[in-house]
Length: 306
Ligand SMILES: [Zn+2]
Ligand SMILES: [Zn+2]
Image (cartoon, rainbow, N blue to C red; front, side, top):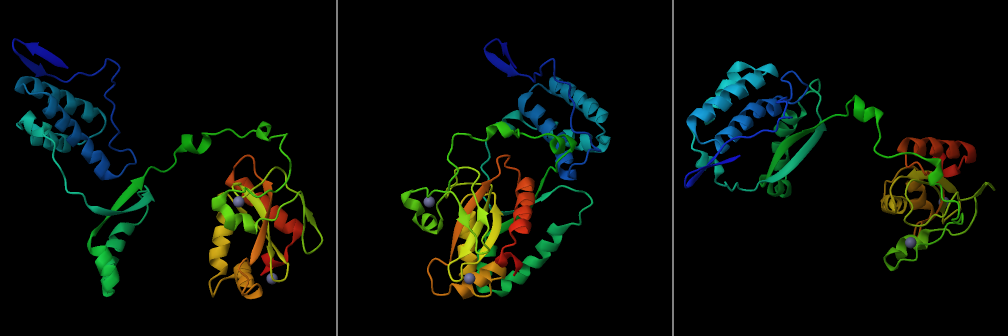
């Protein structure tokens, strides 16, 4: 709020009538530093806006009262206020440029019952200095711990998107087709096209909608280019199947189906091909996994049993 006083202007704090002055309760489950910062920042805000000492004191008193009602310890509130009581507003208004740090952010869900991993990690970092390469990388970095809010009851019970069977497109042909994009050559090459696919055990898979290289939330069947045996899997991301499998089965020491592709189709550039056949319209990961299990059980592909 700006007040005109003759030739000069004065600033004062203004809050809307609807401002209930409710701050995060001090006993609320938040990291302690988050809550301790609140009185500090509110006091700083007052000192920055309000120049007049009497008005400033009045606002500080109100702040102490409001924070007291939200469970903040008197001592903490008074210490925060004392820091800003006599500071010049102009000093707080000048922009300070901080040196940018090269950060590595370790993010976890906030849970006061969790052990303090970050201290353990910080203590372990010097071990990396044993390697010259790692020492070079790590010497520039600062590790910080960031704690995200875990899902509360409301977030657990509500969803930001709706599931609806009406979103199933009726007019699309139920086939697998290559996307045909120039950049996609590699994936297009691995895709088996058509309205059905016969597995090595004679069972037939039919796509439930139009599927291509870009399809997400799909259940797919892989065919080994060496022996023709099959593997059923699922992915919620596009192109992921091809990429992760191609990368993994080109490595020695791969596991399961990857190991099989590595050995059986050794020497072939394309070690397996892929036939996506079921799109999960709800885009629910849980349903995707359940459906995947169902198909593996029903069709019992050999490479899933490795
Ligand atoms: Zn493609
Ligand atoms: Zn094979």
